[in-house]
Length: 193
Image (cartoon, rainbow, N blue to C red; front, side, top):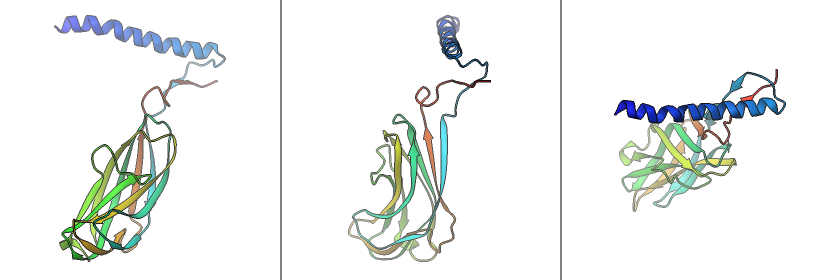
């Protein structure tokens, strides 16, 4: 079985190598003479500081707590991964079992799973809780986008003063990684000598 698989994949590997060499040779003949070929990374990252921000009252309906950062997407075929690392906080709950914090892009939640963290009513007050929220976002057009944090209480809940970075320690961050597909922004490049 393995010899048959080797015979089938061998010609494909050679065809792919030949195609890459053809592209490089075509670029060299087009006035870019050099032997150095490089691929740009398929992941680009941006890191943003998140400043302390609060929202006076929260209800069972999501409300925007804060715009965290504006970032740039290179390709609409990319998958964008956002990660918030910091503290979430609610001062007190008049009713309900807690709150849900949600990371969004352009005021829309992720369509690939959930980008959420919870804070239970028993965890209110004090210094908040450490949270790491990661979300994946597909199909974002190339250009600028805004990441934001949204919050709501549990069903029939009510709370006061929801925050990110309670105490304003300047320790919260948002990391944005764009996973670009090979071939859209990561074509082989040649540099002139």
